[in-house]
Image 1: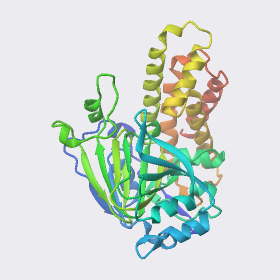
Image 2 (image 1 turned 180 degrees about the vertical axis):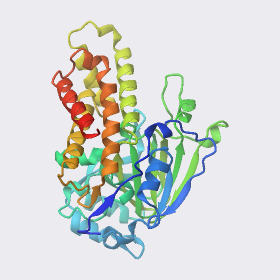
Image 3 (image 1 turned 135 degrees about the horizontal axis):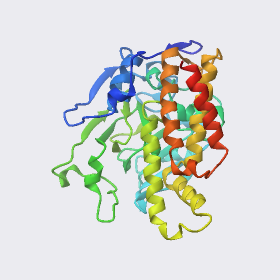
Image 4 (image 1 turned 120 degrees about the vertical axis):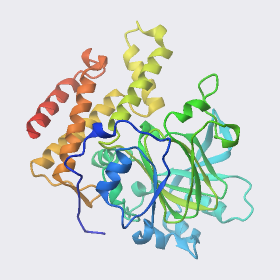
Length: 394
């Protein structure tokens, strides 16, 4: 694929309103071969419908599937030679603090020495490692075509900002707690080697798990509940999992496993992200209601919002404006490649802009923007973008 430009597009008649209601009660997890799965089909049947699936045989052309594996196991020496002096975050699955695993940074060479050992006294899981950003060679894998529309990483790459592209390396029996992905984003995960067991709950089912204080369990045990709809998936080597927005899940490494994971947002789920942002903001404001008359109440709410949700009002708007500006330039003839490979066609660009227009209207009706806070300069920028989109879609 290196050097090849791939054009991607969607049905010109696709409408977001056709997919606004999702019925998970009768759904069964579908499985596809990566070579046979078409972008437009995946866009409509999975991203728009917010339905998970398995995609097989993704890694056949990836460099890391040859370089990182030896005799169908992790090549420890390769990691030590190539990445040994890099630091990576490692979670201790046996140490829990405030319902989360304790983390620390560790040299890759030290983690590989631990992984190679046959007598492991700890359960250590290397998570959220930004290898693509820190390695000299960022082409050790290729973003699958079906995941090319990725506003989060498009914005991060354009701004040389923190990205949402991670390598996970887990020893046998390591695990990830029950959670939903950051921002209620989509995510995809591809196994380079090893095997994972996933448990996924459709949106809304997680509410049945909350305790009297509104907290989720660290792990969901299906045997303790009789009325929970959930899916169990075994992910083998070369398999990809698409996790839709708001699907709470937990993951177990059944054997030593390496995976590559992305979180992403695009036109199919950006409204879900916006509504989740507002829900979290409302919760923050409710929690500190007694300080509402303080002059810095709004800014404090935004700080807390960013700490718990990962994004505040201003950063969401900046994301929307940036993507809108790029799509408008695209229509005017500028060439932008996604992940240096994918080129959006006219129908896709138009769909993105239509959804952004809808989001802009929702933002403009929010009381924060109506009251010139927290960043007054954002309102006129949104008006300019709104006018430009309306002109471009005539």
